[in-house]
Length: 116
Length: 114
Image (cartoon, rainbow over all chains, first blue to last red; front, side, top):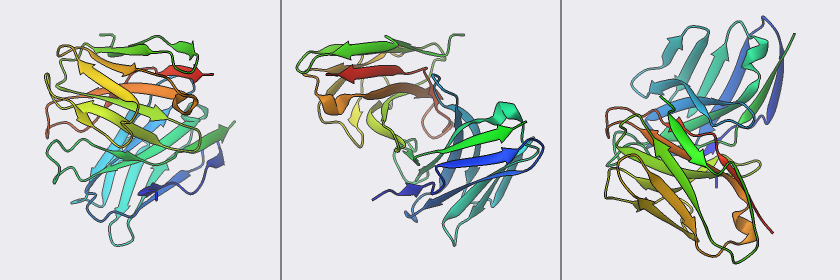
């Protein structure tokens, strides 16, 4: 059973509009979350993270929201650009409780297409 | 800085053959990881090494072995390849335990086992 779910395999958005990518998790012990972006034939690159002590974290055009009671997080990209077209992975960890805090569980990814 | 490098980029093996995937990082990171990515699934952790001299199993370790050769290098070995090991393999590294959770990934190795 997947502990981290991204229920939308793909999403298309017009350039300049908002992209919202969703992620749900089942393990209430998760307390640290990351988003990665992946282009074809490349490794994932880190985008933004959030700790469970926060409900929002912003970095430029990217904002991550965390709703602990719903076990749900979302990544907002505003405004969306064609270069944002990639696969986005959500990852979760019980960082504060593990020995090393770095064993992340990844979701299956959402493919975002930003149309010019 | 090259970051995390992996060799080879592509490999085709016959069932039963063995091979070693190489990974190196130049960021002085303590921790290194091997993942596999299969269609429709996220990255799944095979093995990790929290620091030089230690290795531990991840979620899907069966059929693999690893060696943390030194702080820079972490190799993944398939002793007897099976078609179920056809996948894209990613190596990653991260900083000191408990101080930096971001992982930096290599470009991947696409392995096909026939």
